[in-house]
Length: 95
Image 1 (cartoon, helix red, strand yellow):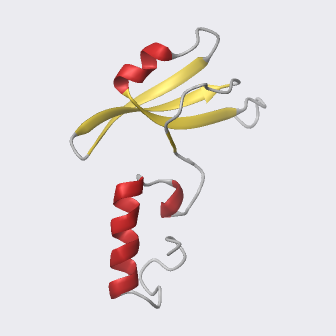
Image 2 (spheres, rainbow, N blue to C red):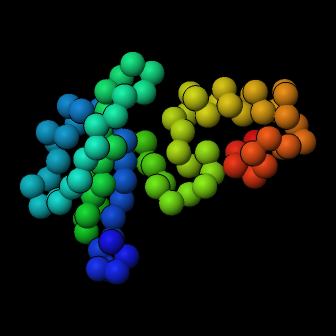
Image 3 (cartoon, rainbow, N blue to C red):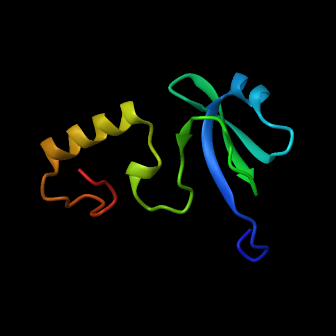
């Protein structure tokens, strides 16, 4: 996409929210399942979606940019308790 200069945004949305998309938006959607819930990892090409969802930064190496809030809080709690020196996967989780 970078070679074509196409801008994109990615959001994780519940499946039913896909029906709310503007017809002017080009999308690419991947279906996923997390914690027993189906959702769409949706890429919006050359448009700004008017929907709110979990922003997923595909190119980030940080877990903080790729995990849902409830999972992230558990990971941070675990990391603070068992790896306060950040020895396991250093720098991947901001806590």
